[in-house]
Image (cartoon, rainbow, N blue to C red; front, side):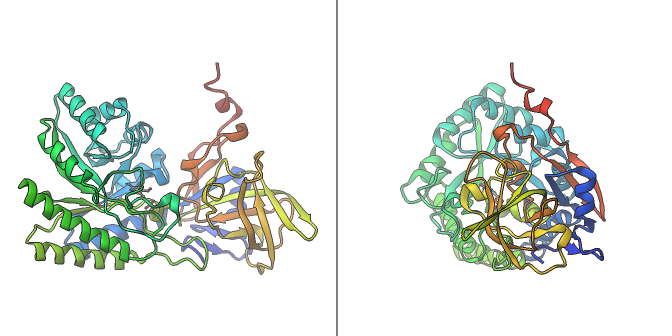
Length: 431
Ligand SMILES: Cc1ncc(COP(=O)(O)O)c(C=O)c1O
């Protein structure tokens, strides 16, 4: 199976974290986001353990909460000893409301508003990851007003090409995120940060891309960043010892995907960092990593009810479900691949090819085209696997469709962690 959360029980039904998907759909309704708590916790522990094993525990794991942000998720990752990264006032608010320790929160974003910067500084977030010079000035000004010193790292584009979709590549010069190395922007930013009285520059950040399935680009980025830190030491006589390598560890959506072997990433990247430190006579930096998708993606499944099956002779078969791009826009955005199962026929062979269509008024509202599945019929429960990341967090109310409920399964039992939206919720802000 695609994820260790997934199984098939004696009734031939698909299971997530030991819970029967057909029973879950009956009890909670569809569409339904289902998450496996044990897998989320295990993955958090695996990330931490690999830093302990290969990097002398000299690092911290920050959950990239854009992948799936709700109060229960922040509680779970905090209880596993992780920090988190947030990219908006809304994510910060949710984390704080869940009781997240502000000093373990890193605040990201390529266009933080002055209000968000004030909120972050006032809340006492651990680090602000600075994206651009305008922002650096604003942080300095607001920190002065609040009489605090802002502890920051600068987001650098290391110029590494990761083989992934264009929309989720961020490490190259033509990206809206961060300071480029090639054209001197990064040096200018350091120069400015060191001059500001209310900024304390702690180190650097880079994030090359998302859904990266090989270790090579991470190792290259680590090397580039170490050389850059050495250049900064030479030029400005400061030794900065924090290096955030971002996230982006790839997961398995379909059988042909290679899940990034995380242990191998940590082992090989640690070797590169230690070797660079030794060659450059530079202290081994404290590292931070920001996994999002890899922590929550494989632990999530979305369940839908099939409303109709439309076969267009000599063209294709559409299977229409009671959700769509409103709860999962990833296929519409960048043709993301998924594995589809008919949950109530999971032990049957997948001998049918169909396109899974949503209920929105858009031809592009598809979840998957020409996907292998068991023979679909009206009333079946259709499951889309590996939907824990960037689904609920990207959901919208397009066509005024209410966002689904999310449940967390632990040892076979499910509890609601996000309520289903109601029609009342839909008009809540209308005047
Ligand atoms: C700065 C930063 N850190 C971490 C992540 C998390 O990436 P992933 O969910 O692929 O691990 C992202 C994703 O876009 C990001 O932009």
